[in-house]
Length: 418
Image (cartoon, rainbow, N blue to C red):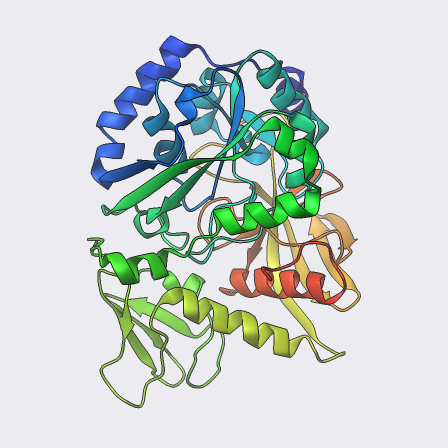
């Protein structure tokens, strides 16, 4: 029986069938997309491009394929998607039908590069999300290492879709979509001559500037309402630290507020994602992104201690070699142990399938983590193999922040915004 990875990497990817793509695209445009009141602005219209091109976009939400593709119909695109998503049974059919390209995020992947080049050489178009993952906090993050080098290698015009409001209809902490306003603008970033003339550092700087978004700041101006009875539910996945007493992993949500079980600091949120308090003794930030940024600054302080260490009991999950994951699972749990990070690296000691299983990762090779669905768990690649961590506590975001800032502290190449 052939392994799924081998089957996946044998496939030669071509531009999708235009009839099937447009049939699905127009169906989504007049059903799913209609709920989000998409407002489209064309600074430059990619549909005027005669040959192949790349469409880049900030990655605000799980719905971005709708927000980027439907306004550009009848143009067709091959989307680059996370490698591990191709092992989930409910995505198998649509990914195959639309000729999506698998890519291992935050790690080199020659197969993905080869297939992108194949599609473009055949006159197709490729959509990429250079941040490498959908937004965790409601704001964008710096583009992944190698993005500029990739664009210079592919040698086709580059357009940008900048999406605003998408995180607010599909936030990371809650898988339930809610209706609301979304805006998308399109513009041309680079022609082929420009890509030849400027260096990778300049390209990276332009990408970070053009892709930058903060949906909470956006809605400070627009004041759009995002109706849902569970608007704040599970936001403690992101907002794990109490700003009043400093306790971690003690926050919980109920109806329209988040509360610390230790000091009972209570913060409310309205349907514009604005945070507020009802008692002067409580402490808060005016939106969740500012709270998230506060947690990052606290982590930066913590890791200045040369004896700093963060550890957690976790279960570990892996992809099945031969069978697709069913029931929207993202991995099969095969073991458990202790995951820890300190100034020497990232270490795991435990068991996999009842046998001893230990590994280490350097801080330099691990700039961040990805999250398949919400922020309840996170993953990376270990020597090319997908591995997912299910922490016992609600600590995924602290793992993310500590790992990113330790990478940067120890001269890692993936830097934060200037």
